[in-house]
Figure 1 (cartoon, helix red, strand yellow):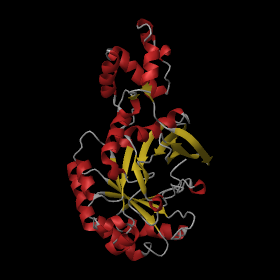
Figure 2 (cartoon, one colour):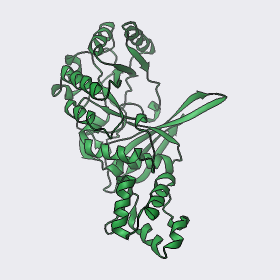
Figure 3 (cartoon, one colour):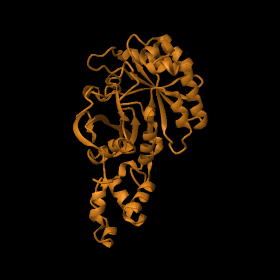
Figure 4 (cartoon, one colour):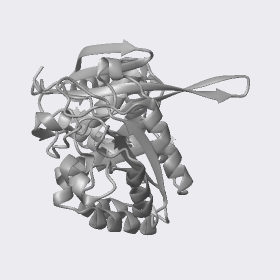
Length: 356
């Protein structure tokens, strides 16, 4: 297709401008097109009453618009959790996860769906407990390839997506420009209309990019940091990024982020690994580190994959660690394990097969 209109790259305002350049038509035409494609997944322009006024415009629009969400080449579901593999236009592939959450609602149960999206093919962070990190880095995803994962969850799998977490393959802040544009598209009310407060960007701790994100007023999202250690010695062993940004530097960037974002809480992800970071003195050191911050800790039991370097802690150890943190005044949630049997849990994405 010559000079296609990549709609998943664009906010409504950007699409309106592009539509006018291509077809010489204003929002009276372009707004219904944008709404229909983003909200229903349909490219059938004949279904829009406005095109009855425009002669042969609808086939031209259908030919020009490109919904480059990629091709779903594999999916597997277990206990409601779906992991799917998207083959991109160059043959590379990424994995995404659809996670249903049931919440009590007066008289019934409310079903809310979270999509865990990838931001890169592979990852250059090299975290030792993460399967994606062992793949190495291949390339960044475009905004359309990121948005396409949410688009597929809604329109291929028919899921009522409410939340998005950037916790799939890759380091989101290592692809900051494309991730931010994808968020602008996701939050556009005339399109996917996902509230910024329901989007969480997780980072391994790129302090410079945390400072940059804090100053982006049009990216009103939650921030999570993958900490996983109470001190620099353990964190450097687990996460090479700590050799670039120490825990003190990381904490300063998080404190600054909260000041700029009016003291918004930061989510701290702590993967519990047997015999590495799960003792009582680790919990106490962690609470001291977090004391200057408004932080909420998500405890995540390590999810081993094939040829794993570490072991998972017992349920008793997880509960003890949670209790030790609570006793120190730390807000803690233990992450409910979902998807580990299909290699869809935290740290398990990435088969090592980057082409599909």
